[in-house]
Amino acid sequence: MSTNATDDTGDVTTDEARRYAELSIGDDEFVIYDRENHQAWIQSTETMSVAELR
Image (cartoon, rainbow, N blue to C red):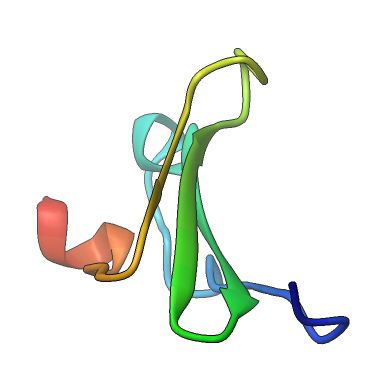
């Protein structure tokens, strides 16, 4: 796991879209998570930005 993890949510505009966020944990690994339910997350080696899912 990288020590340079980043949360890429700067372009989210609606309240509902802000519920979900993506986190790059380095080494081509990503986590998509629910900000209201911290037990709900998905880890993958591929990702799309939250904005692309709208």
